[in-house]
Image (tube, rainbow, N blue to C red; front, side, top):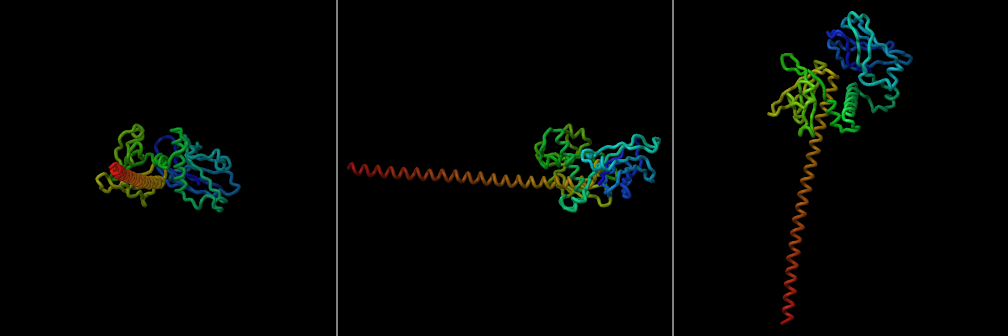
Length: 321
C-alpha cells in the first residue's frame, strides 16, 4: 500500500492535482485535490520482476507536472530506507509551471505469504493500517520530546489526537483550528479542547471551546463528504450540539477512529476509578466495624474482669469472717 500524504511545489498558488502511482501494468490514482493534501491510501500490486515504482503528479486534466521513480528493492522492500511520511524530491516536466516539486509518501508492504498463513492476525483494513501508523508516529514523537521509552495507552492516544482541523462555523464558512485532548494530571476531566492554533495550546492558553469526553455521544464520518466528520456531544448545560470538522493533516477516518478510542478509554478509566472508590469505601467501612467490634469486646472483657474480681473479693471477706 502507498499512502499519499501531500504534494508540495512552488509557486504557492495551488492547482487541482492528482497523484498516479504505477508498478508495471498496475496503477492507481488519488482523487483530485486543490490543496495538495491527499491523505489517501492506494493498493498497488507489484509483480515479481518489476524494477521501479513510478509516481506522477498530474493536473486535473491529466497533464504531467512532475515524476518520481523509486527502485522497488531499495525504496520499497528495504526496511532501512522505508519510513513513515518520507519526503521525496520529484523531477518537474516544465519548470515554468511548477518548481521544486516534492511529495510525502508512506510505504506499507503486505507480504502475500504472511497474509495466506494468517501471521498478520487476519484481514487488516486500510483504516487499521493508517491508525497504526498514526499511533506509531505519536509514540515516536512522545519519546523524542520526553526522553521516556514507555507510555500508557491514553498518553499515546492523546498525542495522536493533536493536530490542525477546519471547523465549520455556519453558512459553509470554515476556520482553521488546533484540536487536542487534555486530561489528568493537567485537567481533572478528559476534555477535547479547541484552540486558535498550536502556539496557544503549547503556551497552555485556555481553549476557545471545551467538550467533556464523557459528554460525547458519537463521532461519525460524513457519508456525503469524504474529508468531513462530525462530533455529536452535549455542552455544560446539557444542550445537544454538533461540531463539524474537515481533516487537514491525516485521513478523515484516522481522526474518527482515534477520537472513538479516546472516548471509549476515558469511559473505561472512569468506570475503573468508580469501582476502586467503591472497594475503598467498603474497606474503610469494614475496618470501622472491626474497630467497633474490637472495642465492644474489650469493654465486655473489662466488665467480666470487674465482676470476677468483685466475686473473689466477696469470697475473701467471707473466709475472714
